[in-house]
Image (cartoon, rainbow, N blue to C red; front, side, top):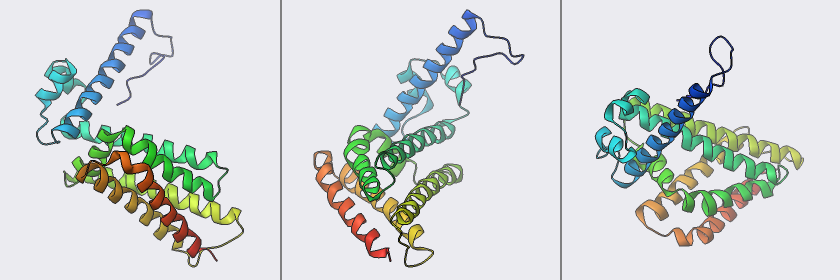
Amino acid sequence: MNVKKEKQENGAPLSKSALRRQREREQRLETILGAAQTLFAGEGYHKASMEKIADSAEVSVGTLYFYFKNKEDLLVKLLSQIGFDLRNMLGAAFKSADISMEGIREAGRIFFAEFCPHYPESIAIFFRESVGQSELVEAHRKKIFDKLIDDVRQALIRVCDNQGARFQSDLSAEVMATSIMGMFERIAYQYLIWQDRSEDLTVIGQDAVDFIIGGIERLFK
């Protein structure tokens, strides 16, 4: 939900009091999202009731329903935010290395060494709590994954073009991108959700990235 508006509908600037109310709404929204994320990740989506979320955010239940239709709507918003942050982090890492194989390596390092250990609640929601929920949540989750896979696919194609190479088949980049995201998901699940081994993620991530780079190079002609 985007509550930020700098002008009124007629184009006139907002008054100071209106701007203050706008900031308060934005801050309240962020507080609610933070409370929901902590409860979804800690207690689980089903146990975290709207009443608990409102209490944790220190707002009334009525205020919570002003921002969100229901708990499902809240989860969808969190998924969008997590997906946006993850795509931005991976994209920036790739571009920082001049669209090369090192960019692929850096994106992998960022995921395992930065995103996973620093945002464990996001990992829990994205890879665990959003799985097997309603059709709406599942469709939204799929949409985000499809975007991530397509980001990786396009990055692989650009690296291939920059090296003057080509893939073995027209499907190689898509298959590799899907495999990479599958590895990211499974490794994060294994070592952050099933096991608490965040201290090993840098080494684990390095092994995974080396494996991925080797696979990519094998598919280059």
